Amino acid sequence: MAQKKENKLEWAVVTGASKGLGYCYCEELLKLGYNVIAVARDTTPVATLQKKYPSQSIKMINYDLSILANCQKLFNEVQTDNVTILINNAGYGIWGYFNESSLEQEMNMIDLNIKALHILTKIFVQRFIEQNQGRVLNIGSLAAFTPAPVFASYYASKAYVWSLGVAINTELKKTKSPVRVITLCPGPLKTDFWNRSSNQHNAKYHSTVKVMKTSTYARKSLVKGLKVKRKNYIITESINKIVKKLTKWSPQSWVLTSVYNYQRKRK
Ligand SMILES: NC(=O)c1ccc[n+]([C@@H]2O[C@H](COP(=O)([O-])OP(=O)(O)OC[C@H]3O[C@@H](n4cnc5c(N)ncnc54)[C@H](OP(=O)(O)O)[C@@H]3O)[C@@H](O)[C@H]2O)c1
Image 1 (tube, rainbow, N blue to C red):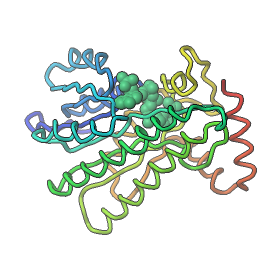
Image 2: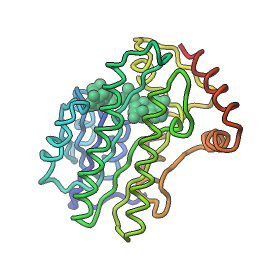
Image 3: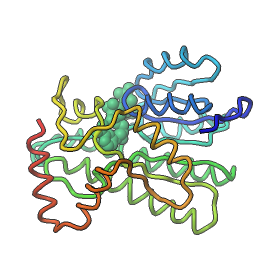
Image 4: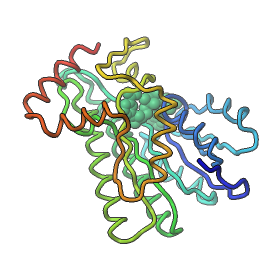
């Protein structure tokens, strides 16, 4: 993959940049020659990347994006930077039976996974259309493709991310815009996601499918996400493509029972 020209100074905004997938996206972007604006509630860990890539610039912005006013503040703060990429990655889940899970936590998750992503996608797409260049990569999930008993609101939030992104990207293609909104749909990754989703500190990680290294997923999905012209969303790895096909072609009652049996045993 060709590196970006040093003097081009393109910036990428990455939300949820302090760990897990977002941190890996920051590193992959730096490798590709982008400057990075890293956003999370506490971006301290990103400072190690600045030491590793001294010739590029990294800005660290500490915002809780579930406080929706911070989305516009973030947008205003990067107005003078030549931003050409936004990766809406910040997100988490709430595992558990719907009648037992915390409504307050669910509303916060909806604010982050859905509303903040929606706001940032809108204002950056408007800016990218004006500047005739730019790409939004929204982090969806394989979870987008089926309802999930015992993980209901998280899967529903990812269905929203997928549906919104596919529709916007279709509008952009139909109106011959060079701007794209691509939804990336990872399968399971070993990150802190499961700890937060299950309210634990050291949760056991269960997965029925092979788990790709987070950095490998970040590299592969970023390269594809920045390149695709016609595709609206990207699923990497054949096992994840098979899972997606199963959710589409199998009887829904079978899919729902399988997901129920998988999710209820996870903790
Ligand atoms: N791990 C998986 O199996 C998996 C599979 C499919 C999709 N995904 C999706 O991938 C994305 C990244 O998840 P991950 O696995 O990398 O999880 P992670 O390791 O828990 O990282 C989540 C990131 O989001 C940030 N974040 C959380 N709440 C925030 C808030 N209110 N405002 C701003 N930033 C916030 C966290 O930083 P702070 O805590 O410092 O704010 C952290 O940097 C999520 O959208 C997730 O749904 C994950």
